[in-house]
Image (cartoon, rainbow, N blue to C red; front, side, top):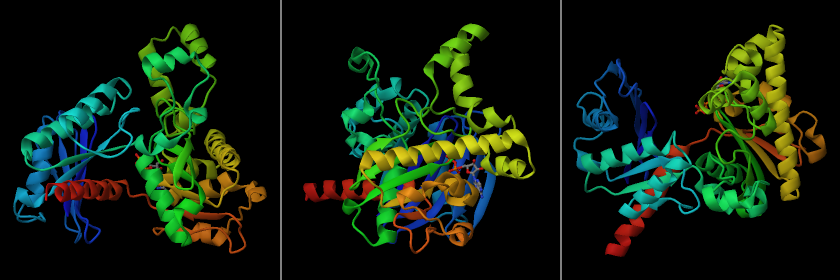
Length: 405
Ligand code: ADP
């Protein structure tokens, strides 16, 4: 099936166009700076043909029109008419407690996504813009929503309830939801494949380390805990987000510095994490370079970042009563041998034995990086959330067609 996968953000639309039968991504790219001067289209076809060109993308509707046009373009396209797009799969940030699995977008599902705007004000409104634009541009084509939160709906209440007045959960839905679910799901499945084992027989810890970072405890294929919470701010240290902190410090700094809620939100989300500690950059490559040159705060940022990952691995091994595999993914997890080595240093008591050469040599492919004697296996995997979205979309649309017959 030919499926367009869309990730509609505040000022960008990222896309991948799949032939799911062949598991092939035919084309991918993004429209960026939507609604701003100097909008840009980056487009790459499976055969390596690439373009980067200025476009007029005043809103998400126009941006998606541009995407469809380039997919059909004579010189850079992969289809000749719109009808060759058989379905659209949307990445949607928050499904709340109601949307616990990927779903065909009906009026009811659209409303449920809309109802989650309060929980994800920075993401769900843009996701909905993408959905509404597709409804207009491709009115007869089924659309499916795949939620970042859905995979974690199996967490027990002991993982998701905060120790604050319970009425806040009832009144505002304040609980831990977790994010990056599509990635954790893919990476856990891929880990089982690499181990040639059934996921249902394994305890896996997946570490998604990108600009945003989270860890998940996946017991017999089900997420039982994850480090992001009510919002993506909780848990690991990230590029610009603080991760776990004492909530009292926020109140203290707000009163000392006379910060508004918006200013405190910006401090924790945009000026903390790697950039906050180092004062240099939110980019791990830059942190590693500066740390290697002996820059003290870059070294400290790297230490704090990896120590936090290590603590979560230990905690989740305890939560699951043991661990069979730890898998790293995301821009940092898939690429940084230093981060992986530091995060696992001292975890031999969990049966983890990193192979130094394999770890250094794991470049560009999914690989095992533990030694042959390691009781707990360690892998690096390149995540592929868009493929999961395409395959979920295909499954849902196919079963719909089946029911109609
Ligand atoms: P996003 O979460 O936005 O999808 P990515 O998963 O692409 O982001 O991760 C971005 C992070 O990956 C950045 O911190 C970047 O520095 C880091 N990264 C990419 N390549 C490397 C590398 N070779 N070594 C260390 N860090 C890397």
